[in-house]
Length: 221
Image 1 (cartoon, rainbow, N blue to C red):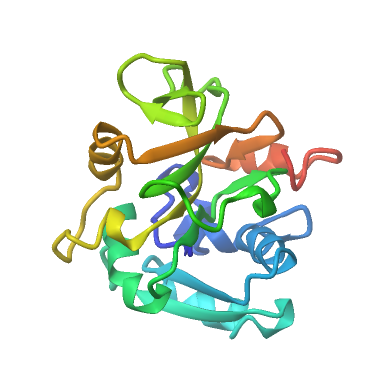
Image 2: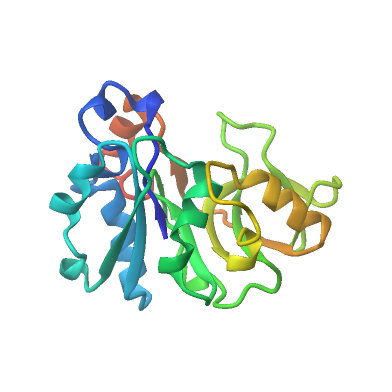
């Protein structure tokens, strides 16, 4: 699943007319970098959640055939459902097996083939060293165990992971964030992670988008 429903407030005015995932960097749409990488590891079906300027996605991406994929669109209406609510709404399209989730507005050189087909717990998250814009990080990584107990190294969630439906299937439909569910899984010792030390960036502003397009920076930033 590629998360693509957000408004992209910090990327305005560009996102006033174009959904953030459809902005271009390195000669391709942001979301296209993920579609290519997923197809390269043998993924054949992708769910994309859409809300802001949703009508632009199908003309831009079609059914996914150009990348050897089949794209399913999960429409959320005019109000995005946040990360948790968006995934929850798409569960019927995602099926019962564990699934990859990635945010459309990141770029990295992380190899999706490294992701486990079966996370040991409820989810497996990719973590990166804390960027300048988020120096406090998100969670502690102790070996492969993610925690909030101060054990290991404090790192930032890269918005790349593999989830089991059970992580959020017991939640009511609607708008909600993933963070409380990650915290619950950590308390149960059911959240694993790995550290990625390669290139990674979260494209939040027009300046960051422009910098990523500089020679030698895209698509890995």
